[in-house]
Every structure is written in C-alpha cells, then in structure tokens.
Image (tube, rainbow, N blue to C red; front, side, top):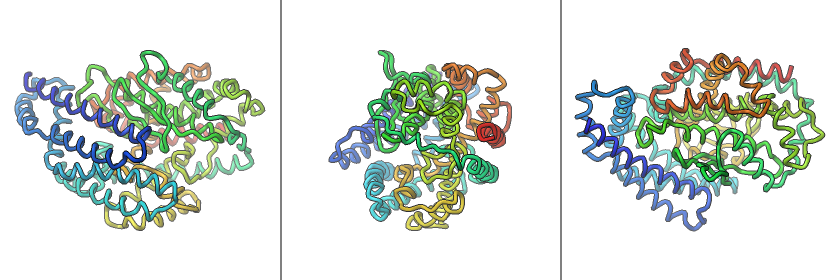
Length: 503
C-alpha cells in the first residue's frame, strides 16, 4: 500500500533523529566538558522541537486516515506499526511544542544539578529543579492521559513504560512480592549472619577491572572488540545503556574495592544491549522494531545479571577465571563461600547494589512514593522524609544521608516517572521466562557451568528479542509462556534457589 510505505518512510526519519539525539545524551553523560552543560541543554531543546514537529506533521494524520480505512489489506506487523504510530501521533499532536522544548532543557539542568547535589549531599540544591521537572512532567502527562482516555494521572505515566498495565494491577503483583520476599529475606539473613564476605572488598586495579568487563561482555555475546563490534563500554556515575540496533553502548562505574559491582553492572547493561541489538532487522526504522516495554527490557538485563550471573553454575565457572585475571586475589576462597557471598541477602540502602531478593523491595518503595506524589498525597519537599520512613518500614534501615537515600537515582531528575515499576515487573517476567526455558532447555545451566552462556541467551533472542514491540507486555508473556501474568514463578524460583544455597 503506497500510503503505508510513505508513512513508514516518515517514521524512519523520526527514528533516525531520535537515535542521533540518544547519542548526544550519551556524550552528555560520558565525555562532555562541564562548561558545556547549558549549551547542551539548548541543543537538546532544539532537537526535541524538531522531533516533535516531525512526529506531529499533519501529513502523518492524513496518511493514517487513508491506511485505517483499508486496514484489512495489512498483515499483523503492518497493523501493529499503524497502531503504535496512531497512538503516538494522537498524543504528540496535543502536546505543545513549547512544553516539549522546556522539558528537554529542564531535563539536562535537573540531571546536572542532581549530580552536584548527590556529590555534596545537598537535597536543597536539587529540590527546586526537581520541582520544575515534576511540574512539567505532570503538565505533559495530564494531556496524554486525556488523549489515551486514562482517568488516573499516574496510570498514564506507567502506561508509557508498560503499555496496558494499571497501577492497581501493579499494586496487586507488588503486594504478593512484598509478602513473600520479606519472609525469604529474614530467613536468608539469619542463615548467613556468620558469613564473612570481607574478601569481596579486596582491591583490584581499575585497569584490571576494565579487562574483566570486556571478558564478561564477550562471554554473553556483546561484542566490543572485533572489527564488527556494535558496542562499547564507558565509565559514568550511574550505569546505563543507550543506542539503536548496530550501535548500542553500555556504561559502568568501577570501584577498586568492589569488583563485583562492575561484574554485575556489565552483565546487567549487557543484557539491555543484547535486546536492542537483536530486534528483528526486517523491522529496523519502524515503530514495531523497538522494545515491548521497559519491564521486558529489564527482564533481559536481570535474567543475565541474576539468573545466569548469580547462579551457582556461573560462579563455579567464573571463580578460576577471576583468579587468573587478578593474580589470585581470591585464591584462598572456596566455591561454596564465593557462591554464598555473591548471593548474600542483606537489606541495603542502595538499589543498584541490592541483592536479588531485596531488590524488588527497593522498587516497591519508589513505586509507592511516585503513586502518592502524583495523587497529590505528598509533595516534593516531603520526599526525603517519606523515603527514609519507607526504608525503615520495608528494609529495617536508617538512612544516614540523602546521598544514600532520595538522591541515589537519576530517574526523577530525568523525568522518568512510572519507570521504576518496570524493574520489579522485569523480575516477574523473568520468572515466567525461566519456567519456560527450563522446559525447553532442561540442561541450560549445565552449559553455563562449562562457560557456554549462549543457549539461554539465544532462547531469549528467538522468543523475546525478535518479537520486539509486536505485542503489549502482558500479551507477549502469554504468547511466549502460555500463561497469564503472575508473580508466582519468580517467587518460586527465589525460594528454591536461596533454600538450596543457604540450606
């Protein structure tokens, strides 16, 4: 259909512009000199204006009308492209260009202010810029909620990351997670209270850790070294992944006295990168050639980080390699102790350093705060207090300062409200994927113990990556696993794994 082909041509223009904008963001976080911040905010503001104009061109609306009248002539993929384009067009045409530009500019200012405030432990420095980001995001989301016909503001924000899911559904899943995970956390903490994990703080030079990072990236199939490489590893304050198909870059923060932080950052971000690189090449530059949801994205990263990287099988394989790379730093540590240490369950303050069991509790705290904030039950000024209260209630921890508390994440500074639930939803999706993988490839963990990580990753590639955005997340899960969305399989996995490790 000629109109459809023309529409996809316009989508290609938009996607190319968007991918170029991503690279400018990557430069902002990695190599941009400090003085360039205000210039970069102006550049991004202008680019967001151009993106908005491109996506709201009235000719797109005219093409959509023509195509929708003859939708019976389209196949499943084409209809999905039209659906996604229509959804975005209807939203973007209602959002003023001036608001888009203000949001783009404020995002840069908020993130840069957050970095300074976190380093200085100064909430008051960050609060006014965060308030502006919240206000602008609320303004945009109110418009989008009306267009989508979603009556609850926070549900509209959540829908941007997990299409089709509501906060009531998420609350139900998270209640189940909280109830069972709190029990597992206590049992594991009790079983490991005498465990000495101080060896994990032994110093390893950053240059050695860079080599370990490249080795692990290669193990999972993320190429950063050959002449066909589509990835690279850079260093930042807060690890992230950014890119499109053939150029997807990951970042890490190294600590001399915490090599495990770098190992799991590379496994996590590498999982994100593989998802982006393995979308169906036939769908490149089309709306369907993207992620199904941010939770699906997190499922890919957390599967490789935890279900592979923290498995006893992987750790038995990797301990000798780690000793070889570090000159025997852990040569006096036996397998059983190493496995327990890498899977230690202990309530902690920092989300990205949290263990596999308590991680979801960190997310539930953030979800409840966001939901309350955008329901006008709390204000921006109250965030540190509410944060500290919830960490005391859910994890039994006293937060000593805002750097280790409300200032630890970049998401709110970036305006990513509704994103946090995707992390714990990714765990739930992983539980369902794992149950299916165990049926399809019963010996996959035996391969991991031999150093072959690819069978399970290839399963993800064929069953999840290749489907990209063809389905909404709940529908995708049912298509792949044959089951409705449920937290049960993830919780069963956690209880079985940690019962085995900690007896």
